[in-house]
Length: 89
Image (cartoon, rainbow, N blue to C red; front, top):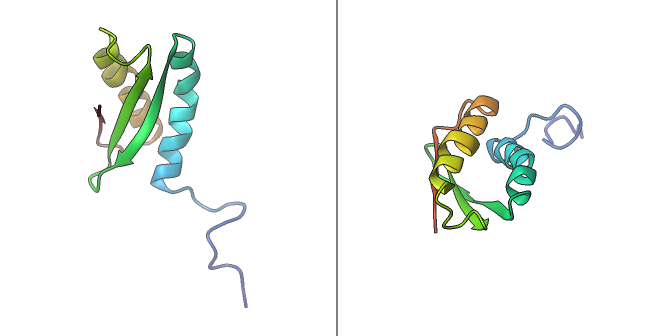
């Protein structure tokens, strides 16, 4: 039996969630450098990404700006299918 039908392996296209996770891992060090972090909570069917800010980022006055102008902007740039980012508690 051929292994061509198996999605794993070199050259396999990444899933939407894998792409989103990869970008979150890219931005995580900047948040951690300020004592915070970000957690992927889930992805809605319309490709809206749900994130939770943690640590120093949680409740920070600049958290909304970080979420929209930072994380959402980068996610949409790297993964154009992303419709938006929402913060969850």
